[in-house]
Amino acid sequence: MLALGSCESNDSDTIAQREIRDILYDISMEFNLKNMSGIMEHLHTEYRHKGMTSYNFNALWLDRMAQYSLLEIEVLYIDLDDDYAVVHSKNKFTSHSETLTLNEPEDSGDISYFKRENGVWYIYGNQRLY
Image (cartoon, one colour):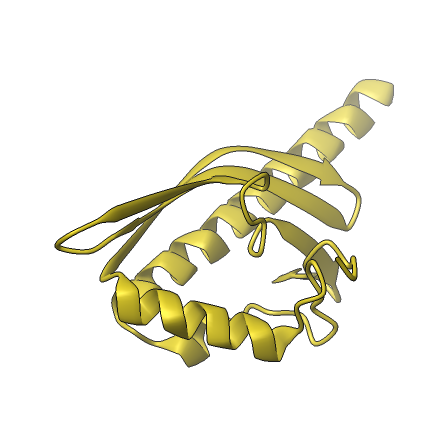
């Protein structure tokens, strides 16, 4: 019976990781299509990251869209803790003249912290004021 329980846990972890990876893929596609509302759909209503609210997040990502034409997200691994997750990734923003690679969550982390609510994963931020 313990083996069955651990298999279920591993299966739910695998599903959660796939759902989070799918969200990050969606974000990169929406970025490349310049569809900010598609990105904002993945933000939790109580998003807060280093003092940034969803309003600030929207402004930051609109600036990134203006500066860069493509976003590629390489997920390295995901730390799961029940209904919370932290994504470790390399987020590569590219334009015709420059490239910015963020090692997340260390460099910015604005799309690294997730919360599952009512079975749906959302970008939640680190919930810190600084």
